[in-house]
Figure 1 (cartoon, rainbow, N blue to C red):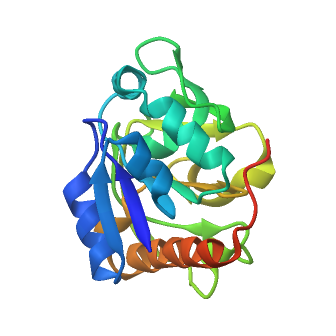
Figure 2 (tube, rainbow, N blue to C red; figure 1 turned 180 degrees about the horizontal axis):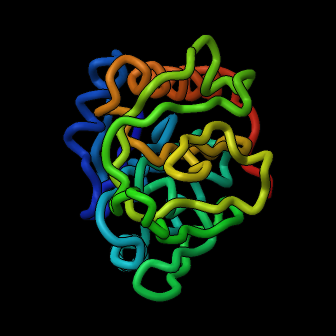
Length: 216
């Protein structure tokens, strides 16, 4: 089973790739359309600014490739900025259009009341849909966040987990075969690796069954 880790010039690719390998799967760092579409599952990491990331994706044609992979039913996981890119838009440095796979937008933390921006450090997850396969068999715990913007999904049902940073903050999203984690699972100890393992197990099951695609 092969996992494509999308290389568009703005991801923490090495650490994500190593995490996939530690879990016993083959992680392929690639910006090649054919290799992404031939993989069983896709990881979209991201660090940096939303607008720059979308510019890189569009310039390379990988925005269309990621959309095609999602439409085919291939499990897709956005990580950190990669999760934000799954949504319609971000207000970071002006309005920037995202991949539009999930409805919603990314907005900046207001800060104040002793809350620093960026939000950086370990925060506890609260599972809203513990029955979801991504969360199956796991207990709530702490994971590692680094972000100045957070996502406001349009649909409550797309929220799988939140954390608290002065108010509920989107931590994990999912609809159909498209998932996102605002934190870095590869840097989040046992819980982060367990979440990544659950995603890879979803990929493995789908590869065997050929089931389901994203439906907006």
